[in-house]
Image (cartoon, rainbow, N blue to C red):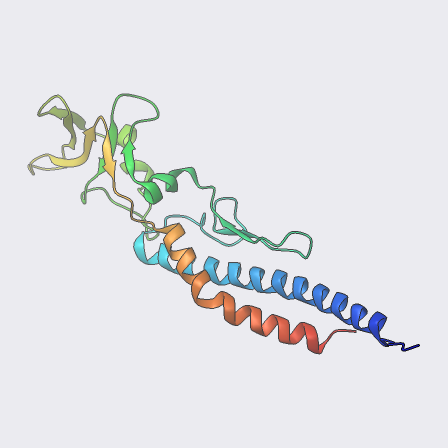
Length: 198
């Protein structure tokens, strides 16, 4: 009788199971690292493309650039933003007034704070000596009489709607960063996971 005995099969299976666990762990780490890199890249691009007023963009803020990290059980990391006013900046479209009949677009005559916020006294409803000047059906102007004999200044352009171009490129920027760093992040995470495996 000829017998072939395969030894060490149980040990090999155990090693393979251990490697599979390390692969999942490394994948979760790499996905989370990549999401964090995309978050940073989008934050930087957002500050370059827009004048950020207030602290809404900060990390961890309700309307900031946020992430959901990956886990071994759920191999997916998410980068997202829930600021409703940024949706049109990403997708483009037509902005319409929430209340009232027209949108007030400030001109360079409107004074702002150091953080580029419109001063309370410069908001349309707070302007003193202000009046509307109608030029057509769609556009009108909110003007203000300054002190002295200077001519009225145009403070706001009033319009029924405004076309907003897609200028944020949130998804495009994030995808580009993911493509750039994920492979490197995975190699580093896997090497560390194997080296520290028990």
